Image (cartoon, rainbow, N blue to C red; front, side):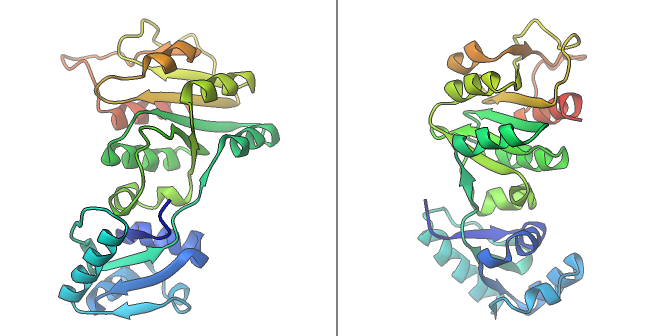
Length: 252
């Protein structure tokens, strides 16, 4: 795991400052970028204890490029003339998740099976935060990863939804069922529409990769397989859109 990360995007930066101020290492911005950030977020006194470096627009992009190389990511131009260097967001393991299930009466989990596209994963994370999902569970292999692009698209959601990484998603899902969690997997090939299913206090929704859906190993252990039935000529959905529909239906 890398020892630093970058956050870009005004809302993502603001959420990190509010939720984990001790993780902030440095804020780099132009004069205009910092003024715009304060105006849009109404954060002012929250910034006084942080290291803020004011630079020119050209220097900001060159500095960002250096940090991108340091964390081994391809450089992308920083929007809004501001970015932040932070400690990486904490991730959790299954022992933590099982303890959470034991001490909480209700719990919402989103399982991502080989969803590796950063844009889709970040959009899902943002929707998950909207619906009050407690954690996103994903396998270590095929993990979407986090970074500046993820932070920008997730718009601060990463500060509110925990990320749990496991070595085997099928085994983790099996254990969830043993812990009283109702597990619903979504597949366009499923025959069930879910109308007869009863929502429970502890729910886990499983979304597969956009091109192939759930892996065979995950599909075998999922308790219920449900299809979101099309009403028109297009028969499939982007995984982030499918996730939003699933959360609206099952996690409200």
